[in-house]
Length: 327
Image 1 (tube, rainbow, N blue to C red):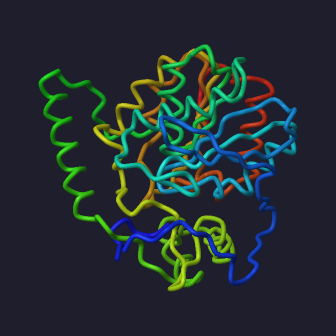
Image 2: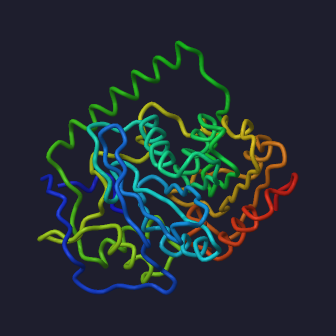
C-alpha cells in the first residue's frame, strides 16, 4: 500500500506478468473472477469456494483489495462457504471513478449483493468495509442474516449527531477540500518501486507481518509497469477520503443491527487503526451482540491472526452470536 502522496503521469491499466513467482503458505487466489456493473463503474468480484455453497459477502478496508483475503477467505471457503468479495471502486482491478463518495461505495456493495440471490446472507467487513457493511445492513435489513465486523467500529469519542446547519457546512467543506485535492493530482500516478520496496512501504501499515507476506501482497495488489511496480490504488484517493463522511457516524448504526452480531477488535495501536477501545463499543452493542478484543493484535486482525479470526467467524456463523459480554 503506497503512501497516498507518493505520486509522480497517469498510466494505462495494462497488467504485466510478475517478474518472479511469489507464494505464501496458505495463500490461495480466488476460484472465480467476474465483473459487476454499478452505476457505470465495473467492479472486480472474486469468489472462493464451491459455486453452489451458501454465499457470504466480505468487504475489504480502505486502500486494500480482495487479495488481502487470500489466506483468510480460503479458511471460510474450506468450511463450506462461498466467499464473495470485490475490489471497491478505485481499488485493485475495479474501475476508477471521477469522484469517490461513501454513498457510492454503499451502492456498489448493494450491486454485488444483488448478484447473490434474494435470500438473507452473512455480511463480514474489515475496517472501512466493516463500517460499510453496517450502513448496508441498515439500508437493507432484509438482506442480512448475521454480521461480523473486523475492527471496523470507528470512534473518536464524538458520538453526538450534528445540526442541519453544521451538516451543511461539513458537506461544503468536505466537497471543496476533496475537489481541490483531486485537482492537484491530475495526470499523476503512484511512485514505482521494486517488490521489496513496495513491501517495505506496506510494512509501515502492517508492522507485525513478515516480509514474505508483504512481498506476496505486492504481486497480487500491484502491477508491474516498465519503470517498476505500483499499487493498484487510484492516486487521487486519500486516507479517510470517502466523501462527506465522518468515521464515528458508523458507530451510530451499530445499536440498530437486528441480527446476530460479532465484533472483533485488535487492541494494538497502529497507523491504520481507528484507536477504538472496548469501552467505546460495549455501550453500542446491539442486543445479544458479542465483542472479542484481541491482545497483541493490530488493526488487520484477519491478516495477523487468520486462523483465530476465521474460527471466531465460523463459530458465529454456525451457532449465532451468544448473548452479551465481550472477551
